Image (cartoon, rainbow, N blue to C red):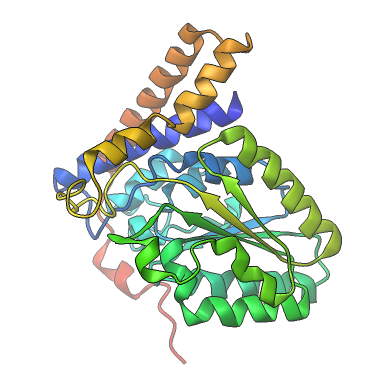
Amino acid sequence: MRMYRQMTLIRRFEDRSNRAYREGKVGGYLHVYSGQEAVAVGFINQLKQQDQVVGHYRDHAYVLALGSDPNKVMAELYGKATGLCHGKGGSMHLYDKPNRFLGGYGIIGGMIGIATGVAFAAKYRREDSVTLCFFGDGSMNAGMLHECFNMAGLWDLPVVFIVENNKYAMGTPLELHSAETNLAKRASVYGFPSIQVDGMDPFKVWDAAGSVIEYVRERKSPYFVEALTYRFAGHGAADITDPGSYRTKEELEEWKQRDPILTLGRELVANGIATQAELDEIDREAQSIVSEAAKFAEESPEPAPEALFADVLAS
C-alpha cells in the first residue's frame, strides 16, 4: 500500500507540474517520470536511513519517494524562495540532503561520477551505507560511465548503478546508439555482477532491489541493474510532437496497458489487500496534496535579488 500511495502521488504531482509548465508557471525545463514510477519506488523503499540517492533530471520521483515535502518540491519548480533549493535549482536540479537526495543532475552521465564519489567517501569513512545512482540509457555511452564502473569495480565501492532503459535517449532508439542492446552485460568486464529487471512490474522491482542492496551492503562492492521501463510522456514538457516523431501512438498505448500503478492496484484488489474504493480514496488524497502544493507554490514569494550571491563559491 505504501508503494501504491507513493506512485500515485508521483503521477499526480507530475500531471500537475506538466500543466503548470504549459501555463508558463514553471521556468527552465521539465522532464516527467510517468510510467517509470515502479523503479524509483521499488528501490528507494529497500533503503535504510543511512543510505543516499543520486539521480538524473527526471528527479521529482526520487525526492517524493524519499519523503521530501511536496510543497517545497513544487515551489522549486516554480522558482520560488520556499523551494527545496530556494528557487535556484528548478526541476532538473533538486537537492534535499536531510532526506538523503544528493541531487538531480542535467549533464548526461554526470550523476555517475557524483555517485561513485559518494560511495568512495562512504568506504573511506567506514560507513555502513549504500548509494543508489539512477540514470537513463542515454548515459550508457558516456565516457564517465566507463571510468566510474572501472573505479567502482577496482576499489569495491558500495554503489548500485541503475540504468532506467526506457528505450529512447531523447528521441533516439536504443538500437541506434548502442552496439550491445542488452545493457546489463556491460558490467561484466568491470568485475561486478548485473541483472535485468522488469521495471514495469512493482513486485519484481521490489524483490530485485532487496537482493541487490543486501548484496552491496554485505560485500561492500558494486552492482549494476538494467530496469526495462517506458516513459508515457515525451522526453520533455515542450516535446509536443511525441508520439509521432520517433514512436507511434500504438506503441505508447501498448505500454500503457502495463502501467505499474494499474498493475499494483489490480493485485492489491485481487488479493483482498485493498478495495477499489480505498484505491480511489488514495488517488483523491494525492490530488488534494498536489493541489495544495500548487497553491503553496503560486502564493510563495520570488527569491530576493541578493539571493543570487548566496551559496556561490569561488576558488
